[in-house]
Length: 438
Image (tube, rainbow, N blue to C red; front, side):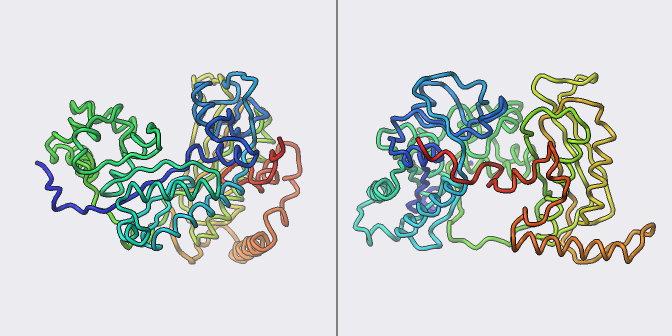
């Protein structure tokens, strides 16, 4: 089976990525060249379990680090700058850059893919900006972003979003001008030669192993496989993998999408600031997380029918069963009441905790339902349950208006608590203006 490219949509799609975004923003803020400075953005740099969130291209090249390298694994170098994250600042810079993109295309032709990556359909903009082709438009956008923000961007160009993304990830980032163009006529030459397979959109390590079991060890093998064989193994996703191997993607940036489905689960996990070995401190953190996630449930008008707790031990620690952590879950009567959910969380934790050194804890609520109905417990006082619901609503209202720290449990001021210190974080990382000075 082959595809007739003459029947496939052919647009001028740009996939644009801000090169080492967080690190580049920090370099520019310090008056340093983003491509010629060794700088890393480190989350939790004060402890051995901190992670590199972003590294400048030079830092990656010289030190051989990645964006998941731990702080104690980063080699020493006299020229290396280590800075804490400032997520609010990055979000503001992201907004500024996307405003630049919007100056080149209509709103429906712009789609934000991630904090540092966007898609633009410039097909109808070429004439307006007197560009002969998509490459000229890409150069124009690169120049404007660089002039206004100091950030370098890489651009993948393709007939559809898939080819543009593949061109970005596998071509533009290695090109001298940070631009690569992959069209339908380049599929066999470029797409089929992507190696390893995990560099291809939609193929992770698990999918790669499943493909290998079918004798598929390259993108070309995938393209030449009987599609119904792939459907038998992967379902509809198998047919999508087959089409993608041929560079076929029939999605449009401006197409209307179905209403979003309810998330499968809502949760929060924390890497603790140090190893915790005291049960009372661990339960304190779990109480805080249970409260925070319950608030998110109510904010989304959701209730949960299943509570999960996960515990990860400190690095190198294992228990008598040889485990490095554990997770447990329990089905419950549907609720979003903070007190009830906290009790279930603590019950799960106490059922398996036995003095281990812990560095990571997490709470997740699943089997979600969007309902305003109240499911009363036959063994509880109905008036008491209604009173607790009103109390939760009052607390949510105050925190929404005045911030989380406007109303906290007294226990959150005890040693080991993390809720107050984490309340100013964005996406789990520092959001303030620390670390600006040289």
